[in-house]
Length: 222
Image (cartoon, rainbow, N blue to C red; front, side):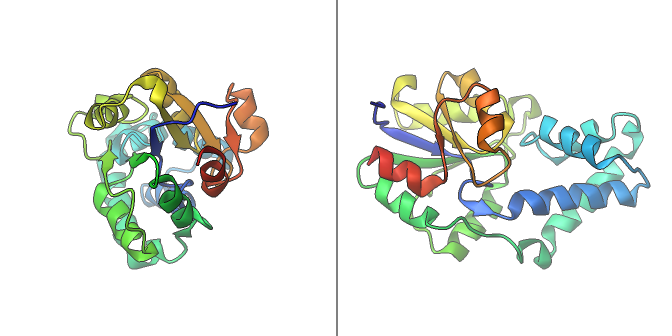
């Protein structure tokens, strides 16, 4: 029997929104192409995951570790790519994620802790018609890059805001760095299978709480 949390902290991309992870990956690839750097698909994917959530400049430093002089140039291309209207065309609500948030907020606090920009998250929440989970802790917007995801700083801010103990909270994500951040904060990680990780990989990373999606989680804890 699982302990029912008082605070549910959610990653955004791959948990509430689907297609955004792929869109971000595409913009990193476009940034590499612009500076004429070609990595194998496997290396590119691995390096993106390595720095996922840390902010685009730190992410590009990892992708361009052999060519650091190109980071700023590539960064401008990445920002332009993300700001294009077509970036959002294939970003959709994870089925029933809105219902899950509504259900959970009846009995517990729900907030978003993400490496994405707060204004991007708010824009998509508005588009999805989600009124809940409007308290957003964005590590992207933290000035000190050393405190960005997977550093647990934003999770700790959320715990302090809601006056919640570690044992009373869970963090729901879909990426390896979500697990790293949760464990660094001392919070139990929950993986949903609507993003990067599949069940096999999540178990290999030592996660014991795995749900098919956010609505499945909500049904279990509400």
